[in-house]
Image (cartoon, rainbow, N blue to C red; front, side):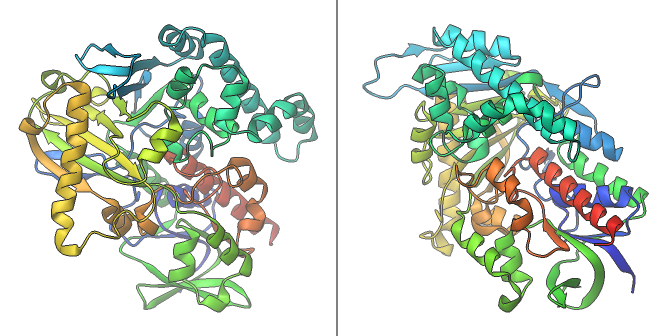
Length: 520
């Protein structure tokens, strides 16, 4: 039996990036995946004559050929080829008016709203548009983006590793860097003097992080918003599955092995550290080093004996909260987007303007919060002629399914889907139900079954002030359980997001390759 340099557990985004990086560097690499295809969330599925995108709303970090973003840089380093299609906008936020509201207007859809904001890319354009909607917000928005650029410079110089010159270059940026990471998003925007109404629009992407402005640090949110606004977003022409297949090809072309339908059911321990894995309860495979693309909670409960789990790992798992759960309704429509009256790719429909109020509403189903995406807006040929594809997403927190009996599941699922569709119809003043040809509904149990995560979360652990980007990065080494076993994916320092997962996979691979080279 071959003894591998590196065994990667799980072919999600992080695992694929890790395995591709190791294989390309010449390490003998084995990637194990319990499903029959790669990608985890980055996949696709077919219903009738529609091929649906399961989870990718929009991917930042693409950039341009002249100035690629972080995600495209990773794919370029791996020589993984993807046909990117760009979206040159950010988001549209609609907050329908509620009874008693006084500051409202009728939008272009004929709906009474508190806010209807279409936000462009580019710091200047975004800030000008924000000021048009909320006079007096331009200066504070530009200051926020200016701080985000200084923060990126700090990351760039600090990322030069052992180069002392990089540390020296980072020194002028350190004070801003520390202030940004020690205050919440709400505190930062207040300090910049941004009007509250503008803050609600500015904070729209909080849902991509899963934590509201009072619990999420200013630095990390500005990292995310900078990436979306500076260069826009993109999607692979063949949906997110194109990225997974591209990385699969890199692994194979560089001599790596991929075994699908191969679930790791146990980690074999020798002398206090991992030495191999058991596949499908039978076959044993051995390796020198391991990278695990699953949540630590799952690894500890499924792959290890209790006595083998380091005490600090148990403490850490018990101290963290499971992040947001998602529900998605996939719709194959027998009308084009033009016939439906759709003019935007991403529309955030919120029951309130401020992120904390939205978060409170999302503690259970029926919040009135929904994101509607039309894939044809970016990929015109993603459906047959005369049709279009929509997907509607909402989020919940905690075990929202605990009181739903198995015999009531189908009825409950249909009601949730109907409520989400109605939310979108009202907010956009359009008809959806009469033109549905195919529908698939994924509640948290669906994601739990496929992703094998607690409550079906794709986000890992809740990002919070004490447990966000900088704290996780500083404690990364201590957070890894064994000297030859590293985690990657949504549970790691950057939280959820395709780009975040690719980054953590590449990082774990680089550390693994360095240890192999040094014989450690």
